[in-house]
Length: 262
Image 1: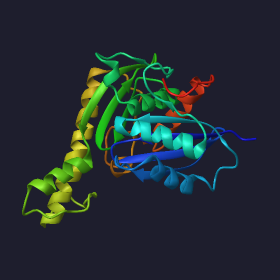
Image 2 (image 1 turned 45 degrees about the horizontal axis):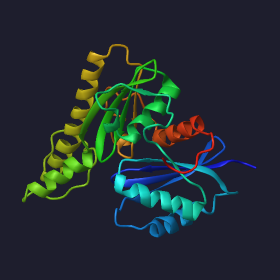
Image 3 (image 1 turned 90 degrees about the vertical axis):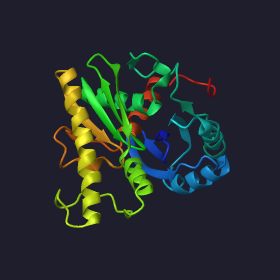
């Protein structure tokens, strides 16, 4: 019988659910992150999304979360609606990555998970750029060490700050305009948001490459990553499922029986 694994990436904006059948990611879904939701509310939605593709019980579940208040809710949801006790990516879990920063507990679990997947596929030095609520830049070395990174305000957060603080400027769609120089307010704003953020991304990556010669790969992930793929001078490729792949790898590295969370 195939082995089914639930992988969950809980971020500040979205919770991404995925199901692996053996080594194949069958499908993935996004739920809005809402801290006031109960385990039952998340569970009913998750069962509606996932139930039709499961061809048997789950072998296990693994969760990466950067929203600590949701951890208990997610654990209760998975246990009640899927019948397994989830493994959380937290200190003490085997990742295969040595975290060499001042305070390893400050590093978001999703950043380590991304580096696990990136190192498994490309080796190192590799940089992962994750376009989320914040945009993070993370470096994993050839010998599987997380060496640090950068945190910048996310694209949507930056745009929302502009919309909120400039009374006479309208809210605009975030997209690439056809030209840098716009002839109306909407295109002016789109140009500033898009090309300004592109400059931030490429500027940080250029400086990272100056500090770390020999970076082999720069991979983008996160829902907004495709927006910059064509114009970035430093993004080599995208992998929008990178975090889910990293969760699968970490689960495999911790497959010994485990009784709940520690």
